[in-house]
Length: 204
Image (cartoon, rainbow, N blue to C red; front, side):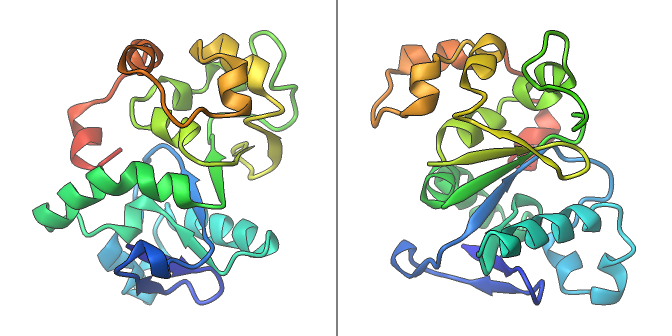
């Protein structure tokens, strides 16, 4: 598992879960010019990429919250290695569950409106429609939602009733996630979500 140092914007690899430091983790939708592993290693190039601002904003937020480390799927996995990609897919749920906080960045959501209101951009966000973001919603112990301008708009707990309306995942589950959930129940949560072939290939 690779982690990004939130001040140096450098990658460090950890080989065992027992050695993982405290870290925040990012959940997001892939967009244009996402920063990949090899881009991080090219400082002059990466700063010109559209996705770099998301990396910096995530690291800045994590640092403000007292975290030296953050995990971001776009640049912490070597997607040119089929064996590493396969291992990452199998380990993803564990990585999200071991994080101290998950930042759910919803770039299609506005911060100047009530996310609970009918017809809000939060309720319409594509983040709730994608297959991979289901585990990113339920695996972490804490989830904080950020709008497109990186303004905090609430948590999984504070927005539980609204998220229940959107996803049909019971608010009681969102408040206190059970250790075991039946396959049928998980399948019902995933029934209205979509995962494209491109997202499968990118572990998104």
